[in-house]
Image 1 (tube, rainbow, N blue to C red):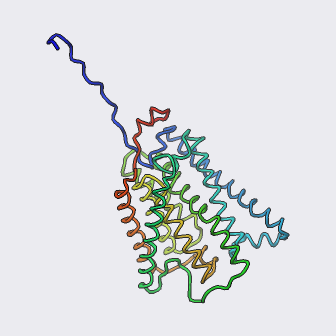
Image 2 (image 1 turned 120 degrees about the vertical axis):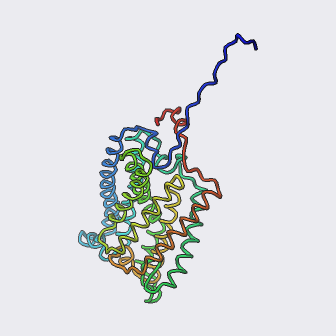
Length: 330
């Protein structure tokens, strides 16, 4: 090379912005108005889903020969019947469809972006989270046995083993087939879409977006469970906060879903074996003695999941510009 030849500078590469789960709506239509519209549409579709669930349960009951008064009584929730539990579970199952539809239609994204930073459910990671959740529940049960007046499930188990009946069989069938969908529906709505939408609606300052993305869905999650005393509210709010933190720390819904699913299955299993579903599904009061148990579960699971994300190299973010080149925007 001679001294007269010009030096050509190397082309500049565009910096890759790493997006967390709560920022994934930036990959679609980024204007905040779309997030606001999405929240409103999700709310409407969830209400429509509840009507669809009611129809889905009422029709089989009528075809089975139930009168109108009998159908109303079975679906009143007092007491909780297998049909009522199916109604609750199906309502949240339809909510999954609502979230996926809004992500696709309103935001112009593949529905998988509602699940994780890889645009899909990470089945291997989800299976590992189930194992970590199981370990956590064992530790929590041990702590619960040492704390007077507390209980892992909130169910009184002092009355002996329940006898087998057709009603109990109906509950078992509903729990096995529909409870996973109920847990998934709540996660898709509160830790999924609302986490993403609320983070998009506030100014893009990292501490604020993370705080809103975790705290506001947690409040709504607790309120969505109906009447309750302060101790029950704090218990549900704390679960929502932990699940929200897990979404941000792991880049997806899998960790929160695993704990939510096993938590519900354990509570229902204990209720079916020793207690009753009415008090388990609709607890309105409790003591503060359960707070150490709740804190134990939260801290142990957070530590185990944090260890797991590092141990197995779980993806927590996605490079925005790479996806922008595939027809999306950042």
